[in-house]
Amino acid sequence: MPEKNKLYEAEITGITSEGSGVCRIDGMAVFVPETAVGDVLRVRIVKVLKSYAYGIIDELIKPSAHRTEQSCPAYHRCGGCVFRHMDYREECRVKEGIVRDAFERIGGLSPEYDDFIAAEIPERYRNKAQYPLAVHDGRAVCGFFAPRSHRVIPIDDCPLQPELFSRIVRHILAYINNSGLTVYDEATGKGLLRHIYLRRGNYSGEVMVCIVAAGDCSRQLSGLCSELVQDFPEIRSIVLNINPERTNVILGSRCVTLWGSDTIKDIMCGNTIEISPLSFYQVNTVQAERLYGRAAEYAALSGGETIADLYCGAGTIGLSMARSAGRLIGVEIIPDAVRNAIENAQASGITNAQFRCGDAGKVFEQLRREGCEPDVIVLDPPRKGCSEETLKAVVSAAPERIVMISCNPSTAARDAAFLGTLGYKTERISGADLFPRTRHVECVVLMSREK
Ligand code: SAH
Image (cartoon, rainbow, N blue to C red; front, side, top):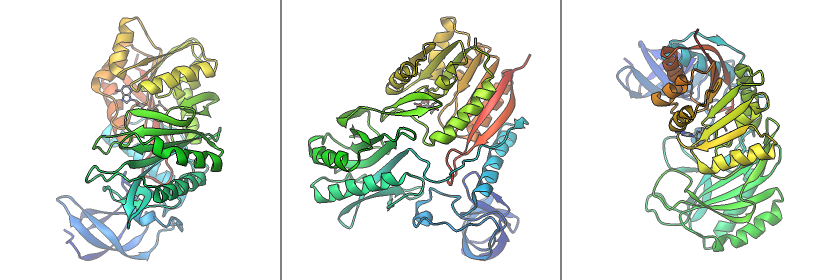
């Protein structure tokens, strides 16, 4: 067994779904962050558990051929980009492996794998950023939380975000530091401003600035609003989100529009999409469009089908398929997102779509009682996946095909395996990289009813 604080020489042979390299020392798996397959290292053991251990690089003896120069000054401290030190092709190979591993090991499934949907541009792809605020040496700063902590690492320009976001943030910080506005302190619950939250339509270029505060400070922000709209013509909406709770959930439920429109617009899969501060919208628009394209291939619509899009958010997936189908029913739990979805259908001239608000499983059961029998069901749940009740309700409608999209291959594999016990065969899977440089990977799964 390796011993804490001791040094060992080892070679990295694999990467975990968390993005850590793995090597074996004295027969035990040791996880070493910021490494690549092929690295030969001197590893310092920092923690030993029953069946595995954690180490850090003491010396890189022979670097892997997959290593690249990484240029972000916050890389070591921020922890967001766990793959920034390796070339992007290798990152995609690793991510494809993470998807396969989940379906084989957790799901016990052996589907066909279609080509991995790699990003053409792995930088500056995000259309949304949420920067926590903090006070360092008496001045307001913002950045990202350090891994597994609520300590803010100030970041001047994150290479995953549009450069415009960094300029807007600098302006807001300067304003805060010159005004009497206070920054919220998580430990004491005192102070006002909590987060700076920005969104930008990838194709429209429209920007929403949302200030998250512990209380209503609309009047104190009026000067900031005038400055921002003067300096940044891209801004179409400035919103105050009020979150008085002592929680680490970023957004509160109340939004007050301080300037301009309540929403911004973007285009996705050719449809006009209206985005509210509280609505989910995929952060990498270009890659999401390619993912939804694959989902549409899997749905194999011929024109007359009824589709149910469960967990539909602002309706993007279902609306991208609605023109090839007879009828679309979307279900989503956030009321603002449902309103967005209804408006998005209208704005895009789609007349065969309906949206309902509520829990996916419960609303779907209700729809079943009303006689709804979808031919194809699209599921796009949050990270925790679907409940067994929801999956049973889905199966009770006996759809020909289920297309599941997931940002968490482990829960997707679990849910696919459960659907397998209910008569649905996992046929095909594609991995897709919607979050280059980070540990996250998305997948889309085609399941069909066994005859
Ligand atoms: N399909 C959309 C959104 C996917 S994210 C898109 O691609 O943009 C998952 C969505 O599920 C979020 O909009 C979230 O609000 C919603 N959601 C979470 N729990 C839910 C539940 N129990 N029932 C219905 N929707 C839920």
